[in-house]
Image: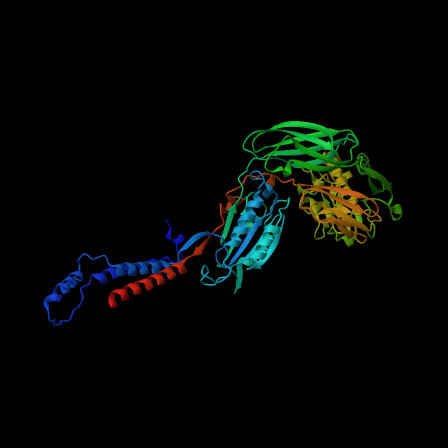
Length: 640
C-alpha cells in the first residue's frame, strides 16, 4: 500500500519515533532526596513508589501515559497531512464538466436517463462544497465551482461562484442536446481556469480540479484534456446495446429524371447479431419495407428506389424495434423534384464541354459567344472556355483553359507547363467524390499562382491543374488545361466530376438541397429573389423573425435538436430542412471506463465523484481535546 496516496507529507510520520520516549520516561527511576520521617507508617508507601519507578520493571496501567501516547500519535498524523476520498470538490476551485451530448439521453431503467444521473451527481458535488466557516469548516474555506456543458461546443452554464443556489439552478436548468460531444472548444476555458500566469509562461494551479461527468463515449477533441492537471472522470450509464440509423442520402438516377434512390446505413452497436426491418414512408404513406440481419458491431446498407414523382419529408424508421436510445431509430429526409440549373457556356466552340452538360438532366444549357456575354441575364452558373471577362460580378463560375480576372487573386506565373506531371488529387472534397485522376494525361497547362484560400483539387509538379476559390461573393473553379488536349474526356472521372460539379452548383445557387443535415451543423439557405424577411421555426428553439433583405444567404445556427426546421419567407416560399443525429459515435452508447484519444488513455472512470480531502485539522483538534482531558486527570490525581 502506497503511503504517498494517503499522506501529503509522509515525512511527518518519522516523528512517531518519539512514542517510545514517553514510555521510557515512565520507566525511569526518579532521583530522590533524603527526608527524615517521624514514623515507620510511611515506609510501605515509599517502598511501593521505589518499585514502581525502578527502571526495566513492568509498568502499571497508567491512564496518563496512554493519553499522552494518543495525543502524540494524533499530532504525528496531523503533521503527515493525511487525506481521505470524499464525494465533492477538493481544494478551492472545481471546474465541473457536464456531458450534454445525445448519448446522455440513453434510458437507464424505466424513465431515468444518463443525464438525470449526471445531474444528480453534479448536485451532490455542489452539496459537498465548503461554503462558510463553522464547526464543519474550521478554517473558513469557501470553495468555488464553475459548470461547463459539453455538446457540439463548450457551453458555460455557470461562471466560478461560491453561491450554491446559483450552481443548483444552473444544473437543474441544463438540457441535453441532440449532437455529438466535442471537447475542442473547452481547451481555452480549461487552460485559463486551471493555470495561472507566471514569469516565462503559465503554471498549473494546485487548488483547481476538473471533474467530468459523462458516459465516456467516443468524442472529438479529447486531446484537449491531456494537459489538464488534477482531472477526474465519473462514469454514468450501464446500457450498451443499440441499433440505429447513422446515415441517409438521396440520389436521382442518371437513367431517368424522376427516379429516386434512397440510401440508408443501419449500425448494430451490440455484441450480438440483430434482425431488423427498415420502413420508408412519405408523409405517413408507407412506400417500402426491407429487412436485414446485422452482425455484431457491424453495419448494413439499405437501398430504396422509386420511379414516382416524390416531394415532401420522407421518414426512414426501424420497425418494431425498441432500445434504450430511440433518437437514432428514425430519420427524416427531404425529397424534391430534380432542380433545373441554368448554365451558360461562353465559348467559341467546345463539343466536350457542351456534351457533358447537356447529358445531365439537371442542367439547362445556354451556349453563347464571348461577344454576347454582356447581354447574359438570369443564369445560375457561367462556364468560360478560353476567354475571360475584364470584371467578374458576384456569382458561380468555371474558367476552362484561361485564368479569371486579377480581382479574384489568380495570376499567371510564367509560360505554360508542357506535359505536367501529376502529383495528387483531393479525395475528400464533394466535387472530387468517386474520381480517379491517375490515368489522366495532359498536354500542357497554364502556370498559375493561386490566391490565398484557394483549394487545390488536382496538383501537378509545377502548377495546379484544378483549384477552387470560395468567397462570400463568388465560387470560382479554375481548370488550367484544355480538355481537348488531354485524355480526360476518355476517362470515367470526366462525367463523374461534372456530375459532382453540377450538384455542388445546385446547392450553392438554390440554397440547401441536401436530403438531411446532422444536428449541430450550420446550414446555408440561399434567399429567394424578392424576399425581405424570414420566419424560422427550429425544434427546441423560439421562433425567430429575421431581416434577410441585405443578405444573399441565410445561415441556420439553431440546429441542436432532431426534427424539421421550417423557414417561411415573406414572399410565400416555405423551406423545410430535416435535422438528424447521423452520428456513429453517439449511436455507440456503451459507456466506457476510460477516455481515450487514439491509444492514449486520458482518465480512468470511477462511479462516484471522489476527491481528496485533508483531515489534519480534525486530528489536531482531537489532540487538543485529549490534552485537556489529560490535564484534568493529572490535576485530579495531584490536588485531590
